[in-house]
Length: 134
Ligand SMILES: [Zn+2]
Image (cartoon, rainbow, N blue to C red; front, side, top):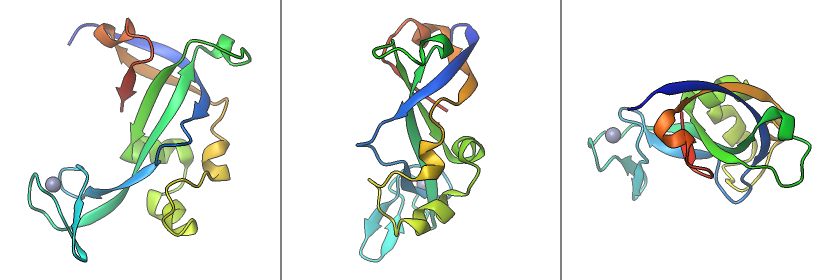
């Protein structure tokens, strides 16, 4: 596991090519695959899907926010962590864009510049451009 550090980051941007939500298995939170008109989890077999956040952002040191090319690390926030950030349930936002995954909403765009305190694992901390999930 290594040591855990608390670091302060600022959200520099959202990765535009990546979906910020997915259909998850309600039970184990893995991506649910569609089987006809049903969703079925290949891991646990549950058939109840759930619309869930999977929001990946570029994080920077807050003092680097105004720099053009700061060192960034990617952070992915899932489920309730992302919901807390955005302030709206995933289903509400997804419904408002009719399920489009490539559509960037003001609710998400307004996260730019937001400062967060995150826990970072020491072994990952040394990896720049690594992806850290919550
Ligand atoms: Zn499952």
